[in-house]
Length: 283
Image 1 (cartoon, rainbow, N blue to C red):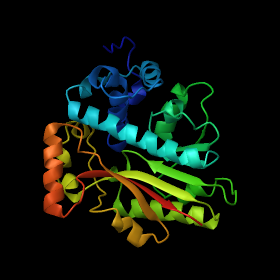
Image 2 (cartoon, rainbow, N blue to C red; image 1 turned 135 degrees about the vertical axis):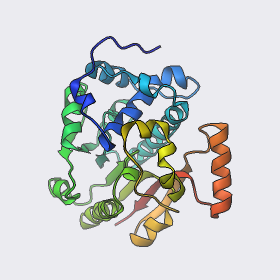
Image 3 (spheres, rainbow, N blue to C red; image 1 turned 60 degrees about the vertical axis):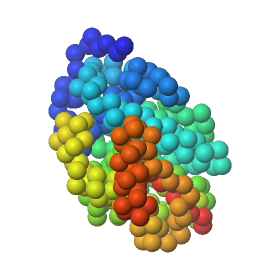
Image 4 (spheres, one colour; image 1 turned 180 degrees about the vertical axis):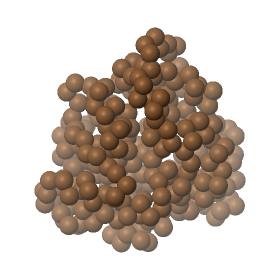
């Protein structure tokens, strides 16, 4: 059982809206040993990060569906990222909006990657304070001006494979921002004549309309904004990218979620309620 004795960091209380949603995923990783012991997931950094900030996950404990769903999603992302590194170990890795997730510490093969965490300045400040010693990676500030501000600061290495991933974040952002982000990252790789993989999760229009029903998200005041009906919307807009893998993220969360997911797929002609995709392109 998790127990917190230190006082919460004042910076945590100052979080609200989208930045505060990173505490949902931190809570899930912290609670995983107790809540989902049947899943083969272990995050060696979660407890240290929580202790360093005095974070108590109690506010999210009751939302077991979100906690389990977050771990299932994290496991899918871990596997997809490791699969890319198996093929391209010395990739430039762009981790967008990872919050307080020190993912490198639980991946088996990230050591050769040129890793960048792209985050809002207030989140980076917290992240750097609890960053494990010796963890690979550098940090770049993202802001509302768009991806150009941090993409142009990345080194130009012709042919170096590019991996971009965004877990649990794009659905909170404005549609124009997300499309611009995905297009600019794809163009970044094309300009370097490099293989690229873009990995992200998304929600359906139905979930956007009912975002107030998510108990954990509702606590933060955030709401879902961007959605997809199918991943083909991305490949239609971004020529050169192919859908290599997708996952129905709601299917194995709970029996009820699985039933709703299956019904939605039936009524929508095969669309996912919540999905994750791995896209790839070659130069």
